[in-house]
Structure formats: C-alpha cells, structure tokens
Image (cartoon, rainbow, N blue to C red):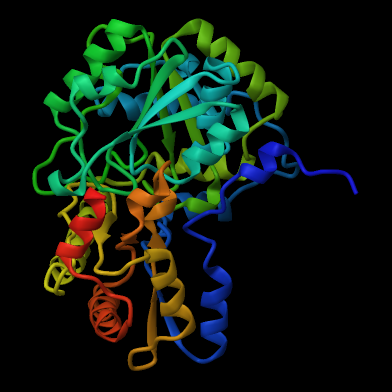
Amino acid sequence: MPSISHKGRIMPSSPIRKLVPFAEAAKKRGIEVLHLNIGQPDIHSPEVALEAIHRLDMPVLEYSHSAGFESYRTGLAEYYAKHDIAVTKDQIIVTTGGSEALLFAMMSCFDPGDELIIPEPFYANYNAFAISAGVTVVPLRSSIENGFELPEEGAFEAHITPRTKGILICNPGNPTGRVYTANELERLRKVVLKHDLFLFADEVYREFCYDGTKHISAMNLEGISENVVLIDSVSKRYSMCGARVGAFVTRNAELYDTAMKFAQARLSPPTLGQVASEAALSTPKHYFEEVNREYRGRRNILVEGLNTIPEVVCPMPSGAFYCVADLPVDDADVFCQWLLEEFEHEGHTLMMAPASGFYAEPELGKRQVRLAYVLEKEKLQLAVECLRAALEAYPRTISMKERQRAARG
C-alpha cells in the first residue's frame, strides 16, 4: 500500500469539528446540543446580499478575474477607506475565504522551514495552513491571567532566529476576543521594523469591538507599510460564512505580483460569493449597530455567567465573539467528549472546542475551552447552567490550587 505523506500525517484535526460525531450521536439520542464550538453566527445575512443572489441574471457562471471582480475590488477599497485604511483596487486580491488569503501569504513570503511567530492561543487552522505551506510555527505564549495581552518586545526578540520571516496576529482575536491597544501594536511595530519581518494581520472581526474599544489596523502602523499583509473575510462581518470570500491586501508590489501567481493557479474566487459580497458593501450602518449590540449582550450573559461558576476563570473579551475559559477539569478534551457522550441537563448538553488545539503546545490549553457566543441569549443562559451542572457531576474536577501546582510542574 502506498504511504501517506508526512505532511498529511502531521496535519492536526480541527478542535472545532473533531467532536462532531459525538454531537450527532447525542442528537440521535434525543438530546439538544448547544453549539458553542464554532463561530457560525445565527445573525441573518444582510438583505442586500441575499437579494443580489435572488435577482441575479447571469446565464453562465463564468470565471472572474483571478484577482476578483474589478467592481468588487473597487468597492472594497472604498470600504477600507471608511475604516481609514488607504489601499487601491490593485492592491487587493479576492480569495476563497480568509483561509486562502493566509495560504497565499505564507506561500508567497516563506520558504519551507522558515519561521512564523504567532502569539498563542491562536486560531487552530493557522497550524494547518503553516503545515500546508511548509512553514514552522514558533508559538509565543500569552496568558489568560492578563486577558491574553500581546507579549512584550523582549518576548518577541527572544523567539527570533535567522529563519524568522514573519509574525501573525489576529486582531480582534480568535479564540481570545482580545483587541490590541495602541501600545501593544507599537511594540509589535518596533519588532517588525527592527528585523524587517512580514506582519500578517488577520482583521476579519474589525466590526466587532465593544465597550468603546477601538480597532487599530496594522495597515496604519508607521514605517512598515511594505511589510504588512491584511487578511480579511466576509464570513463573520456579514454572517456569510458559506460565501467563502476573503481578501489578501498588500501595498508591497512585489508581494502582490507573487501572490497573483498563486491566485492564477487556482483560476478565480467564487463567482456567486463575490456577487453577494459586493452587494453586502451596501449594508446599512444600523445593521452593524444592531449586531454589535446583540453580541455585546450575548457576551455579557455568557462570560458573566461563566464567572459565577466556582473555579471557572474567563476574561471579558473586548472584541470578536469568542472567549477562552479555564475549567476545573484535568483534561478539557476528555471533558468535552464526556459532555456529549454521558451528560445531559434537562434534555440538553453543551458542545465546546477544547483549547488544546489552539496552542502549538497543546498542554498549555489542557484545561481550557473556547466558546463562541453565537446563540440566542436564552440558549446562552441555558448553556451556563448546563456547564454548572456538568462540573458538579463530572468525576475528574480539580481545584484552582491543583491547577496552579500542575502549571508550576
């Protein structure tokens, strides 16, 4: 039998989806599963986007330009201008989701074995994209104790080697919900400038900032205009995950031309997705105001509720729609599977994403979970009570002192 590739063998399973078979089995037993494992919003997509698909008069679904429809790229440039990001349509490549934009960035900027520093915990698929591109991820630890603040300059410096080519951040953060401050981004800027590194900035959640927090784009950091690659997506902004449309944005002409080779090799981004995404640019302002208000209320219910459960620690996120919670269990992967296989509370159980998959060093997230507050408020309240009951019933809970002692080794 021919052997599977090394790359295929080391490709990690998704912590977000790997428990799906257990959730499906629970549903077959008649249990309602509350899905907090995945960032699939239940917010309706903008009417203007749906109407554009319904009204579409296109007898042939043709390829678009490899960079995406010119009209859409022009509209995107105007959208970015409203967020004080100055780019032209010729600095934008429309991609098949933000995932492809990241792959294009990694394949264009790195050779196999080059190193990419990523503050952890980080979006689990960054590992998968890096493996696909032959990139070595160098994790830089951040801490739940300070709300996952971006590490100091010295911490970045300590991780830089002759193979270091770039840094990747997600702002606002997935899975942490952290929105980086001007001070945090300034020290990052200094490191990028000093070592002439690429900075990949995944900013797909820029619309979702709470409590007066302001999003600052990496595209506006002084002196590193040629270093920054902006990664974007319509998936969460417009609640259009299935459109599979993202964007690769750079002011670096050589990098743009290089990424275009990869874009041409895959022919073009999705035609129907671009039709919907271009129309979505006309989404009225009140849509985002209502969505932000809704997510803020959901966040408060979930995070405040979690912190009423004995021994649970969950920082209040300032953006996106995720939070990371530290639980009084010995192994969150085992606990999350147990919830689906053996537990129910009044006919319900909970599906969460074990946070081990959001770390390059899984042991660091062994007792943590990521939760997405993408359900209605009543279901989030029920989820909190489910978790409270589950932790009372779970036979392998441990105290905060035991967790701290284990962390010290």
